[in-house]
Amino acid sequence: MNITPNTYEYFAHKRVIFGKSLAESVKEELGHHDARKVFVISTRSLNQNTNVVAELQRALGNKLAGLFDQVVSHVPRTVGIAATEQARAVGPDLIVSIGGGSAIDTGKLVQICLAENITTTRELDEFRVVTETDGSSRVPKIQQSGVRQLVIPTTLSGAEWSHTTGSTDDERGIKDIYIQSDLAAPGILLVPEILKYTPLDIWLTSGMRGVDHAIGSLVSKNAHPFTDSTTAEGLRMLNRSLRATKKDPDKVEHRFESLIALWLASTGMMRMQYGASHGLSWHLSAVAEVAHGHCSCVLIPATLRFNKSHTRDKQSHISEILGQPGVDAADAVLDLIRTLELPEKMREVGIRREHLEKIANDAMRNLLVRNNSRPITSVDDVMEILEMAF
Image (cartoon, rainbow, N blue to C red; front, side, top):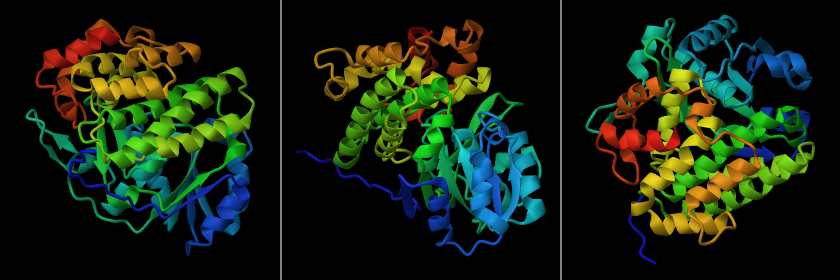
């Protein structure tokens, strides 16, 4: 085997507690922290429509200092500032987020705002990653706040596995990325019993985001044997378990298998150059509030077709993993999307033709797009993908 020299970075995660009850998981993890004031971040639907947040509050007992449940998809800056103001008022020494990727990313943005004493949306400009038109990027230094976050995911977005967060600047119509080592959660709690509350469409849609994580690693221009092995198994498990959940939505065992599969599928996250499928999704979500999972549905096949000349052998392997040897990888992924009854084209998820020019131009300053496995050097390259996906 010809192995190209590379570097694999381990993030500041310490523990993954999986398969235990919510109360047991919280008790075990809190035993590793000298926390007296815990600030909880969740979604309004999870708080008001289920007993999950109430159960978490009971598990925290007198350590509970406050709750923010006004999370909004794609984490608008204004929501991050509002959550920070509420957190700052109670002076937390630990954050616990429970919910999907937006809840987790809101908690990460609060960590940044506390660390840098940010009080306005414009102050965030100083700390966002900036990618220039030549593809080079600048990652600003962000201070450590001393306030870490524990995460309890209820979807398959994968936000729990990274040291980054994304936040939408509504004024510019762009979703920015922020990177800081302490954004990686020291404790990740994978709790089977709470997964049943996630609506089926959200579960399956976020599952395609997990598929995107796996495929992004497998076709990455800096792929290597470790992530090739973990993400291949993650993709195989996701393919099996998502199809099973579609047939039997109430069977928690299938959902939990997907959550474990996501763990494997995310081992390349922010260590590999995922490329255009993942990068372009930030711009779809910014211009039309498209769910990240829907972005993955409409972008993965088009990006695979665009990249095929540079990733032919890797794509053959993806087809085999998906149980369809000899079939184009794009078509094998489409088969999964159609089985799950999810959208296939951008026009089905709210993207209009007049959006394409802005998406293409903005994408030229996107770190992942500019590091695609087949080089993207012009707006025309981006438009080729967008036209196939439209």
